[in-house]
Image: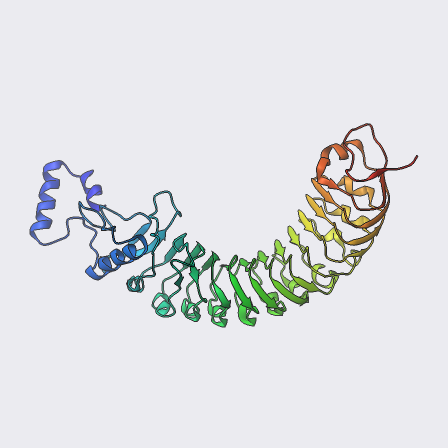
Length: 419
């Protein structure tokens, strides 16, 4: 790479003389020298993931210079040598190398002492033909440098998460997404105090979330959805002061919603749907003023809608409270959430009339109230029916009727009122 810069700066005779001078003095003509051990390590690593067929460039194998390896980045350090700082394999970028069907974790990976980024995408695809486990040791060799570890879409990656991950004290992003990982979350993950993103979704993890997972002062995203995690939600979640998104959906969490979640003043997304949580809404939700997307569906939460001042939720856009055992009526104050786009109250035990004021919500594009015990008349304007179309669902409310309008847009499954 340095030679390319030189070639644009000097005339051809001078440039040839410079190259010959470097060669005669035993210097690397690429002007991007690597330690022999570093070059051997990166070649072994790529072959371990991609296959033995790969042998670099036939012209001049120089991973940090003339012939860089797809998906591999380097940086020059104070000693004058270039070191590998990023490896991205699989369909991460357009030109990234693809892993072979028998890819493994090569031991030489841990010899790349300056590695900052490691991303493996669709490298281990068959849990039956090529099951691969994460190495349990040597992760501490990356403790000073590794900042981002992403391993996603690897159904053939089985076994547990190594406790040695806890030694990666400079890690800012840990993404273990849609793999075949099993077992419990190691408590050592709580040592990763610089984490800003923790994604564990789409695995087969079991057990409780360790209490010390509330020790991430800089964490912005925590996604442990689509696992088999159980037990109570730890109250220490309330100490994740910087958290923006918390997704624990599709697990087996039980018990009451911890009141401490109300401390998360910056939270914009909370999805705990498809669990076994109880305890009503009021004590937890009344302080989540920054929330934009709130999804609590398919939990036996129970309670009613009147214990919450809905007017404080001026940022909320998605509110899904379907199938959570709600009773009582629908309060008029729900029409004060001016940015609300999606409201789902379906499949509860709600009763009473539906507030006409809901049609005044300027952004509302979907209203689902089907599967309740609502009564009275739907007396919305023709324009509202036209706007909502099929996104207004009100069937399975036997005592609910609608006042006919001239429009053909009528709520499906609701009988007309007798005039």
